[in-house]
Length: 358
Image 1: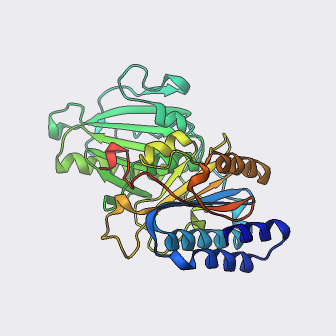
Image 2 (image 1 turned 90 degrees about the vertical axis):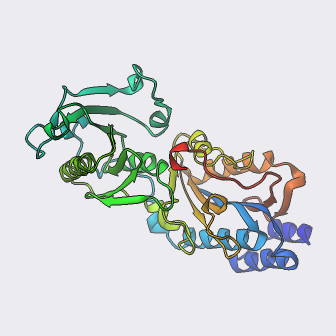
């Protein structure tokens, strides 16, 4: 049956979507509940999309069909899913966003601000800048704050990063988010994790670290965040590409944005060995989804993803490279030259590799 469906698609290149869905459903009807670790990948126009870590064939197919329908029904939205930053209203250097003495109730700068630019980021300390570079880092400014209430010593470090575009700022912010974490509204949705408060607005990513745990210090961090967010008039970033992900059973706090395969591997440590390769201009989004067989264990939940390339030809080339690299013995269903592939992966399902989210 697999052979017939594939040949039918090649013979009739303008096969209707409805008929393709019919044949796909027919192919899996006998074993739709088969358990496994399922990957499903398809290419449509300038998009490659699919799922990783589905527990059943049925779930994988249902999700990929939903994403495909979202893409087909949102042609006007799709053209906006990658912006160049032209809509950004605030373009000041990040050091101009650092609150001065007098802007906060009792907190003052404990030293003069310092900046990093380009490849100089964190060169003088052990922190790794690779994640920032992967998201298009342009310039950073930082300063420490103190207050007489806590002995006039540095207790808060404020960092403002110019990431070049709202998508990049959104991506590095969501790299740190995870389900069930605490959020505060500061003019944008800010995450609270350990000693850190983080948020993005416009093309800026803001990271505030409290050196000690105390209510007064946490209040000072929130005041700093609200002061900066007020200065940035741009709305909180929300890439249009996110609207194409399924909404049903999506786990809150699981949305990610990535611009390279390196970042993708940092987000998810147990992806299949073979994944579509992003180009320099590509942008991807993903989220986790629970099904009825899972007991809210989000680290094992299915991942749905969408990657947008610069044009259809680039997406087709990336899909061919991906398809040709899949071991032939793993391909369960292959319909046509652009998808979809349905693969039962040999590796086990796992969680997120980012240590700050565990």
